[in-house]
Amino acid sequence: MKEVKCECGHVNPHGTVLCESCGITLMEEKTQGKLHDMRYEGSARRSQTYNKTMIDKIWNFFSSVKVGVWLIVITLIASAVGTIFPQEMYIPNIMTTAEYYEDQYGWLGKLYYDLGFHNLYSSWWYLVLIASIGVSLVICSIDRAVPLYRALKKQRVTRHESFLKRQRLFTVSTSENVDESFAKVKENLKLRRYKIREEDGNILAEKGRFSRWGPYVNHCGLIIFLLGGMLRFVPGMYIDSMLWLREGETKVIPETNGEYYLENKEFTLEVYDKEKDNEAFSEAIESAGMVPKNFQSDVILYKKADDSLPGEEAELEEIKEHNIRVNQPLKFDGYALYQTEYRLGELSTMSFTLVNKVSKEEFGSLEIDLNEPQKNFDLGNGYSVEVMSYFPDFEFNDSGEPTTKSRIPNNPAFVFKMFSPEKPDGEISFVAIQQNLEPFGDNEYQLRFSGIETNDVTGLTVRKDLTLWLFAVGGFIFMVGVAQGSYWNHRRIWLRRKGDEIWVAAHTNKNWYGIKREISTILEGSGIDEPIDQLQEKEDANSQLKKDRENE
Image (cartoon, rainbow, N blue to C red; front, side):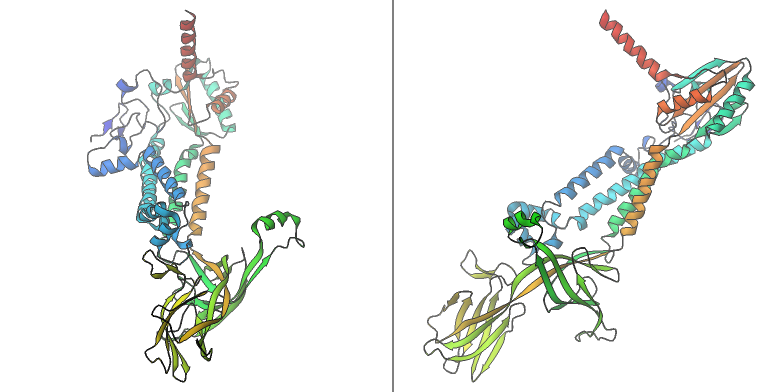
């Protein structure tokens, strides 16, 4: 598109409303009789000038403030919906994720899972929303900041008469000694810390221009903030996992690439006593039955030895011992382990004795680790037991077949095959808590329950966040922009000589009351009249006209 040449000789980009140099309107037919819209200095914005190619249309779409606001609103709504049910990382590892949500929350849970809300912050569509907000911020900033900067940089001191007349604050005064009046005004302007430029005896006084960039500084802070949020989805930048560890157990710490291990030496739970502790807890103890006072895990952190070979059992080097309490995490190598959950009295092992049902004679015992059950047990003298099936959390399904609700041994059940010299082909028995069934007829032998052991289990959150500094930097820059745009304002005062007349015009991007008071102080003692608020004058005239019509 062709550029527009002003009568002052300055060449303006196509779409410019006010000449960047002298300020004359280049679209008189559209602005006749109106005050100048100084929002972007009347400069040409790309989004309002070009709309032919696909790039133009994409640019114009994302440069819209309404689009940016709607993207933020949609993202906030999605984030709120993501808190209705727990995220996948916080659900117990007892069944597949899809089954858990449908089992716990019905059809709403299934819909929640199908739409990807179970893992919201790493779902592709949520990332697209975040990226779209970032693109919108970048394009909005470039679309407005670049032409604004160009217009402010190229503005001349001597502005066209029509430019001054169409400012909100404007007046024409007559002075017997123009030079003396100008000298007095310059002195007052310097006292008010205005930057003064002169050209052909005319004056442009300006201060607070930096405040115009406050919104764009905000945008920079938000872009850095969003960048930090998106970097959380890069592997290794952000980790938030759960580690369930039983007493006496040693496990590799998730997301550490098998480098670090943790041993749970002991789990301790302290509760408030209604009689000994503060009476404030009495009501809570009576209603809940138990109020935790402290729960902690005494752990040992290990690191895999450098000389460990792949496939071999890892050689562990002890790094340190630590007591993990709430808000007192174990920190190492950028990781932090927080005490967040616990399970008391989880079944650990079950013991059985092989007996003859008639003679009650015992032929050996076996102990089954409910977390990693052994397949075969040799009791000696030709007696042995085979674990054919294991159901950690036993129930019957709709077809009447045994199944498990989860992998946690809440209600363990077994299908055993018992071998003896008399029964070399074996006898099958189904054994659960308080159940001992013989599905293929009466057996000669049975496995009698003889004991059980339990363990306390601690739940630790494994967290690593390498993006926090980006959030801090982005937040700081955002607040700088807020202060920059809120507590300062851009003020300009033009004084033009025209014979014995002095033309005065003023503009500010906000706080018109403040600039009126300041101009009153600046013009004091100069003999120059204070400028009139043309917008207020017009509103008063319209209000009076409306009253006159009502009185008629």
